[in-house]
Image 1 (cartoon, rainbow, N blue to C red):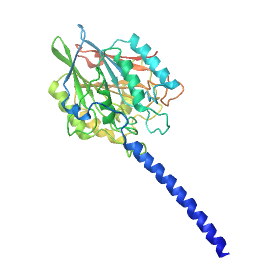
Image 2 (cartoon, rainbow, N blue to C red; image 1 turned 120 degrees about the horizontal axis):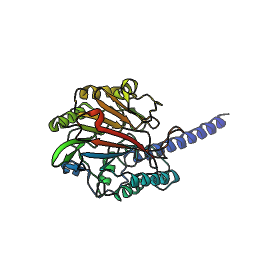
Image 3 (cartoon, rainbow, N blue to C red; image 1 turned 90 degrees about the horizontal axis):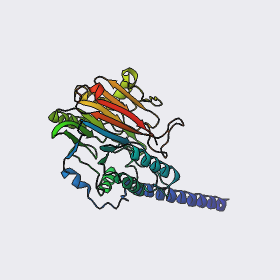
Image 4 (cartoon, rainbow, N blue to C red; image 1 turned 30 degrees about the horizontal axis):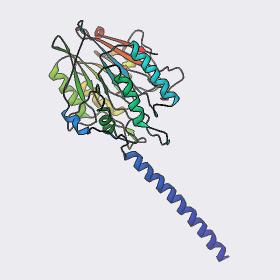
Amino acid sequence: MNKKKKIITRVIAIILTVVLLVVGSFAGYLLYRFNCDKSNATDSYETIYTADKVNLSTDENGIFKILKITDTHFFDGVCESDRHTLDDLKIILDKTPCDLIIVTGDLVDGFNLKPTYDKFGAIDLFALLIEEYDTPWTFAPGNNDFEIDGSNEDIIAFMMQYEHFVYGNPRNIDGSMQFVIDVYNDDELVHSVAIIDSGARKPKAIGSYQPISENQANWLNDEVNVRNVKTSVFFHMPTTAFQAAYDNGEAYEGFEMYNTYPYDEIKDDYIFDELIKDNENITLLSCGHQHSNNMCSFYNGRYYQLSSVSGYSAGRNDFIIPSCTLTTINTLDENVKTMYTFEQIRA
């Protein structure tokens, strides 16, 4: 009997050892994937702190056009869904001349352990497509971009190799990308476009969403106040005011409105809303993140605009057809409500 017990005990010990080895190996693999950099970037992220100011121009009539691409969730750039996304983007870009392209986060998939996942291969194919149009473009980090195989800083450093990519970040401010693009008409500053990193999750992939921090909101107010022109702000995740804008604002005519998920899911983002609410020069807040939500409302003197997905690899409700959003700004119009035109663009 004792011999039988010893054999059972030994078998259990072996099984436990194997389980611990498997779990330990998987945990080690996850730790590596969460913290490795697969970008092979040739530029250093540190150069972002000394980046040149970005100045762009309107046309002769003061018109400035921004094409927003959001939530493509590229997997490798070559799978069927990704090719469909790239093909559609080419059609959209061919028929939609613009002055600036902004990617408002989740360009690539997040926590993905499939061996064929190729984050930077996908970014390269996307960037090479955008570069064909000789148009300045930039990136506001999303919550998924940084989760695995490279941080947001790694992504931005990788993007720096492309000629038309524009970027910037001040030191000692939370987030990987904050900068302002100044828009001129006949050498006069008439508008500005601000890019903000709206945070992600801590811990990665499974934690709660971080809100936009107080120092980011204060930075934005300072940048807007020193310029004293109307400013359009682009980032990834909506703040709590988007729900109020959806419920109580004036819907922009002709823009499809979907309320599939609560717009105010990141409750602590009310701090950002409170800090900027009295800044009359912040006239547009534009984001993505909520794949099957879509809205554009005028509320408390500014527009709140959230776009559904631009890519076929992104999870979404069946009724959502991937699209991009064209924002046309008449920078010479003093009336905030009429200076913007919004249009969903599909292939």
